[in-house]
Length: 442
Ligand SMILES: [Zn+2]
Image 1 (spheres, helix red, strand yellow):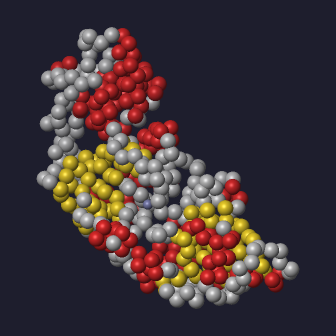
Image 2 (cartoon, protein in one colour; image 1 turned 90 degrees about the vertical axis):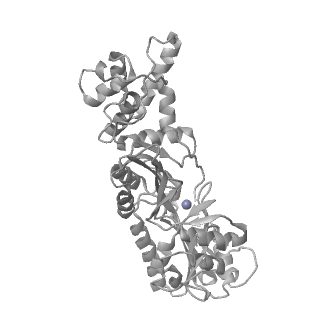
Image 3 (cartoon, helix red, strand yellow; image 1 turned 45 degrees about the vertical axis):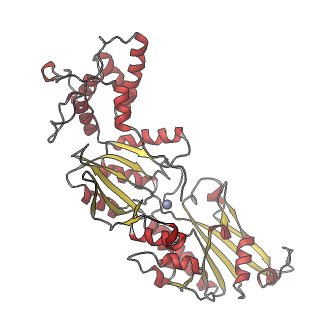
């Protein structure tokens, strides 16, 4: 069963054909749906490729006061944040599954999307003003970069192939289809990514791809300019240095000649090709991710895009600073003792830590201390403060309480409710365990 937006459903049916895709349930955006009697969810536009949604959901059986946010792939913006907040109501955010494509500071994309769009627009505008016989190639994946396409189409209608056109027709509430043409005679053409460049493992302009495409149009061009929108354009070193690449090829190659590349006799015999990287992405920049988390103040951030476990942990630790520290601790204490649970608390399950008088040996206790320390650091407490608090207080609950209150006293004995035993490590794992792992980028 696939639950998705109308645009995604149309795309699935167009690309994969209706007969092959069964059990699709379409949901409107910004409307709360319920599955069963407990699970509630709302789809919110993810400002990513058409059809992509952020899911805000809750299970009223397990939590009456928290909602989780699964970002899928998204580009955060003030309106995305506003939309999510308006569906949270009085609920706080428990977990955020974060599109962490650019989740490492300083590694990539910095430019805002509107700036990227304007940059690409100016490049094309200047080029066509200087040379009306230039062929402009815009590289796109099957879907995505529609904002770029729309802006540039104000200069001249943009040619897209029939497959791409049928996909653009699927997009709901968007006039992008009016910006494109199937007349191949115009200056601006959308081409697949690999026609202009290969990006992995590193960026290489594809002059041959540009030439072959120009030749296929059957028109005479003086110049070819290929604009490659990518989030990795600003990556230090290689991509930054090579963001504008120029080459020349003999005219006969572009005008239908099948010959191999050979040295041109003079400039008139050649066609110049320029391949340019423009920093454009449908994923949030690092700064946007920080703004997003600052606004939502979740209890836990779970990055969903990372190349290995080390990178995942690095991001999780970094984003920890945006978590609602008070709420993290309160939830933790509430789970353990059933106290300090805030306004709506009281009926939650009461859990108590194992005490030292259990028959654990010393070795086990050491492991337990490590787990406790890790857990406290995950909650956003500093390592040194956590160690100090743990040393002073016998159990982790008292230590957390001390750090939260900033006072010297532990939890009062009289507030201790009935005991139910669960080891802290296991409890933390159940409470915070990431459920979704994704390594592919779109
Ligand atoms: Zn995607």
